[in-house]
Image (cartoon, rainbow, N blue to C red; front, side, top):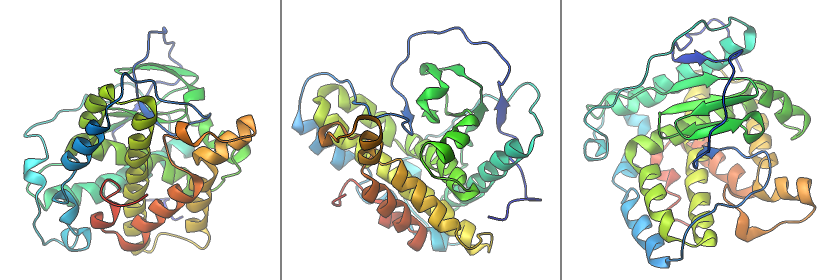
Length: 307
């Protein structure tokens, strides 16, 4: 992908080299490095029905970004976006190495895409902060180590990334390439968009009434939508003529390699579908590609369509 010489986001908080004291962690959204289940409270299939109704209602999904980013169109973001939202400004010095520049460029591109969607609906896109860390970090969601993989914390509207994960992505998951790395960042940004429009807050509220299996099933839909949102970003990046031959295949391969079934086969030799909370390889590949091919939010409705 062609990224050199393009605008870099200033929303980078570089915490590499700092020491972090461990605290208890609360739930966070992240790309997994190992198979795991979501711990929840009691059951309640009614909660899932309510969740599906409350999520989107096809109002937000009725917006066509193809028209919005061209400068026209109208939509229903007004009722779903908060009136005001602030984000803590980055502090400290950011390293100027090539990988940091790459991540800052990808983040800037996501800001341009989602900023256009929000602006066309009379709202300002609350840009997230991307925190770079090494080894371990403490967020508003609690303590996390690099083994957790990249994650988004709804509590502070920040993305967290240890750049060593990209090495692991290539070595352990056999998913190399810059567009595969960009997909990781765009996926976490997708969670930020979900947080702003109310998807994550509602899910976190209602999953306390669900069984583990029900919460995992709904988590899959949340994660697949973030994959689709990442695909929408890729769609507009491609429209700018910035992709090179093989880039799309890199992202699709990454989506395939980090599917729940692929990770479980790799780590434990068998799969437990009831514990899936991010989606299978086929599902993650399909939903990213769906957003990439169309660029339409209407094609990212994972809550009212089979996944």
